[in-house]
Image (tube, rainbow, N blue to C red; front, side, top):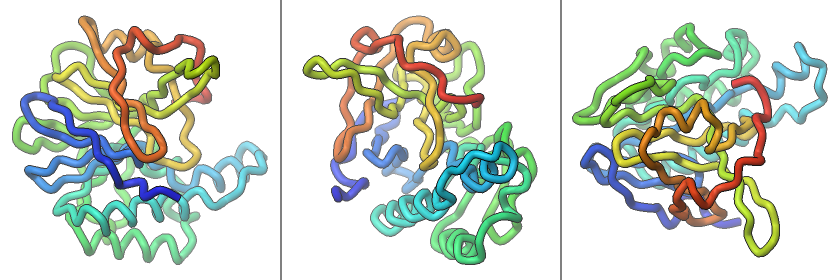
Length: 239
């Protein structure tokens, strides 16, 4: 399997050089900052208990394994988790011991900042790192959900953007970053996260002029204008 950290895609947002990683994470070389959005840890166990849906309950292990690989590869000084890191308020209590230890281990390797989301408004356990509603780093501000109106340097998640494409006559659906050079929305990082079409009005209204999708491939990221995307991917679930 290809290394998900390989072939980063360089682009600019609010005058800063950033890198979109094929794993669906953002890296800011100047600050050695890694950002991920919408981990939705323990979503599988939540559905098994509350919704009685028989999903395999290994999503947390898979998501943390990918995050651990990125931390090992990029050696960030700071890791920002942009909200909805836990799927619900009881997720921390359902975490297996091995996964709890892994989060604590990762938090010892870098400064971890957990942004509050709509799924996880309560702070995570103290040994996981810092908590905040949002944080500012230089010209960039990191929060869970984008705010309507001008927002130069805003980095957010929440919408789980996906790009619908036609490639060689086949319809494809891929996670994507969205940017107009002023703000950036990250794709969901969690193994079981759903997705909202990048052309959906809830997203498009945040980019009144023009915007591009940085589409996540297997080992690379490709930049496409929103005009090349299809409108037929649907919202998989409530965000």
